[in-house]
Amino acid sequence: MFDFTKGFVKLKSIPPRQVMPLLEGVLVEGELPHAAFETVRDKVIFTSRRIIAIDVQGVSGVKVDYVSIPYKRISIFSCETAGAVDRDAELTIFVQGYSHPIRFDFASGVDICKISQMIAFYC
Image (tube, rainbow, N blue to C red; front, side):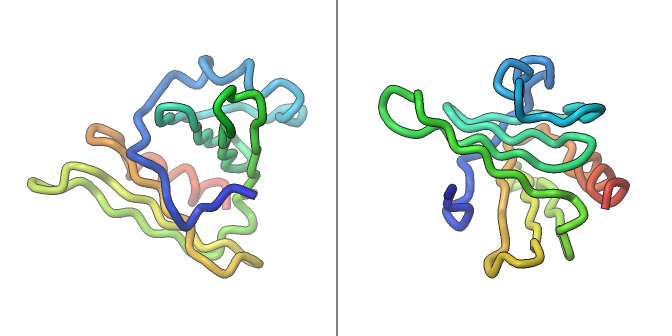
């Protein structure tokens, strides 16, 4: 399973349509991606039902680990907005049944408040 305790290297925003090929067979009927972010190889997608973390493994990148975090399992979350010196934003979520907080570090320019609103709406 993907090790969330290491966190991601600054996720940058990408168009949700760009990740649609990766989500074939993963999304359920009526589920839509609303926001997508990526590092060099990994991706995080916020859909209308859950957060999907995609961890591309190995040198060839053929093996892929999909981790699904349903919004209804999120008990607490916090957002740290970018500042003058630290231009990155951070999202920390606590998931029922998982002992460690899950942290996502976003590159500058990501609207962390919009992500926070989406999580609050779907929780």
